[in-house]
Image (cartoon, rainbow, N blue to C red; front, side, top):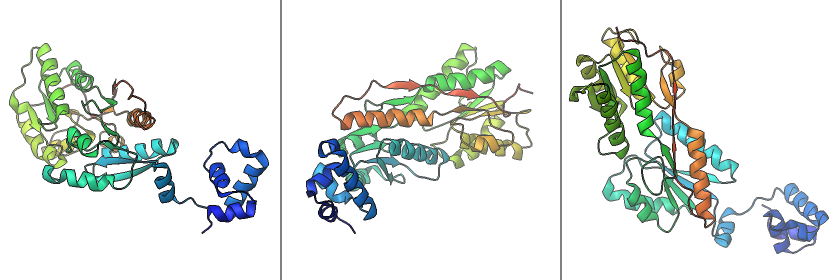
Length: 329
């Protein structure tokens, strides 16, 4: 494998000159002809930089870590793909950490092992890892929290607007018995969603009984297991925390002999590709994956350059109306 010294000897310049030209450090000061000759030799010799040596020298790896709970969830796959593209455009690489729901007692050790990968910064997109724990364990390395109400989060979904949009869509159709397949109550996001659901329903003089709400604990199997109880409670529409839950709810409704949307309307969230292949196509709320990734990457780059994190922003989701919602029977 070619080295900087090999290139320097052939180009008849010093090793620091080759290093500065190939790394873009004021290459114009060496003259256009020298810079062109050095790059041509490096290409012909198939020179590849020693990333470890560069990291030791600059104390930077251009690697950003991304923590997720698991990869089986479709929205997580979309999230990882989007971050990979966004970081690549900024000349950075992604290192993925999959916690798999690690116990709280072992989380600190896992995080320390993960950061040993010499990352410049880390984005925590695992909802089961406490934001404060991750920030404290990885300090002083820059850490951002993905889409949660936390000081280290540069952008998150406006979940009040999300639930208002979904519930009002169903209310405008004439539904009054609206069920809600939500996330765990220990999580701050479902807490906001549940409170908003109750507020909107009460504004329309509807007091939802406990039987209209079901805690999935983020598990699609629980969504399928709990949907029959919502149907038995007389719900003519169901708001689902994500598209995967909605697909499970549609399957349960059909097993019960109900038609979607003629007998029961179902609305999801995220607007994943499965929403278009659902039967019927799924009414859902579009998740701004690209904007969310850009906001987090921009904030991380600001921190890495010693600048303050930009003010946090709330992002709203657009309602995508398809075939899974209609007036009640």
